[in-house]
Image (cartoon, rainbow over all chains, first blue to last red; front, side):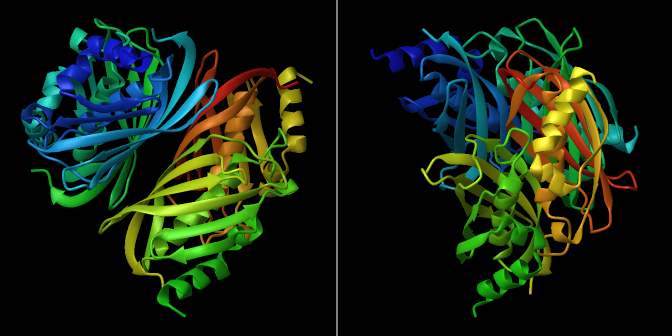
Length: 136
Length: 136
Length: 136
Length: 136
């Protein structure tokens, strides 16, 4: 197992909320994470659409996995999310987290969620603080 | 029951994810919502801290309840969240959503999450689009 | 002159602050704008680096030009900017604004500023409200 | 002169762009800055309203002054701005920057711009990285 695979395994094992979200990792490498999940009936808001918190949470997990792939424990400082397209139970959303820049103390990522038609559901920009402690 | 109380009842009844979060509404009136919830072991991330998505989600629910209190179906367009202080299972977080400004087509809210020591856990700025359709 | 060129000409003529910034348009078409400008000594902050407001302003102009290219007067609602790399007088910054999505009432853009070495200086995510009034 | 006053003097002297903006400091103390400025005809955008970059820039200056008041050189990482109300030449805008939280490596501020009628023109949330170097 590579170091990157060990990091992912360690993070996923204890990440109870990502497990509840039903996240499935499709690709994982240095500075990158792609995953998907299915909207369930217990993920809706008061208008029977997917709750914004679900879209944020799955993107936030992809962000955490991607920026911790570098081996340094990194925590989210700031996130901006734009909600572009809604979703309903049964739909499958794909999330792709890409590194924009990693510095000594900070890291910047772009995380895009798309639906099965390839439409952008949300854009998510995340800034992380790199604590200096090792993930493994 | 006032119209505002009817709106809250209607939204909470169908909001399955807010129910999963264990949200308890403490105060609700025009342009305002205060609620609390308890961090559970199934709400943690890969570092055994509360997942950022949980903090976002509860704040997003408070935002939705507060801006729909005006009677017009309003949907989140943009949110910026800053994560200031972490949390662990067992802690109780309080969320307060306050209107900054409501225009014809848009509304702006400030949502603050605090812990039991009164420390700010996160700040959340939300912009909503007012669809023009009635909630009730 | 195409309608898109007329829109740009009309906006640039009256945009006194973009003129002060010394903005030069390199490419302009539907949903897209690319421009550059040179950091001058009167654009610095208290640490003799380019003021964050300058980076924001030039990106905001590119955002405005790009989203008004559609012919509907559009105004910025929300912007998130991340500052990744600093700059000094004499440097030339390039700004590229790309449409993410344009709906009936809202539009979402991604605006990236880079320096002459191709490094990302800042990322800028902008959400606009489309007023429905015509630019021309 | 107190240390806080020396910091402000040092920053303002070299901050050429804040001088161009015509910023006048009204109050300055640890973690706080209040200032005002007047919208001039050379500060407008293509629709003859105050350019969003001007509103951002003056708020960014207040943010920089406030977070450097602590004596540690601090640089902006992330900013979210919401544009709530427009403005025209001749109007006077007041900007108030307040500390939300200052940690070891990061600081969070809330900056509000209001017009002469007391209406909120924009909200600005800023996150800064504290470099560890001294301002003086």
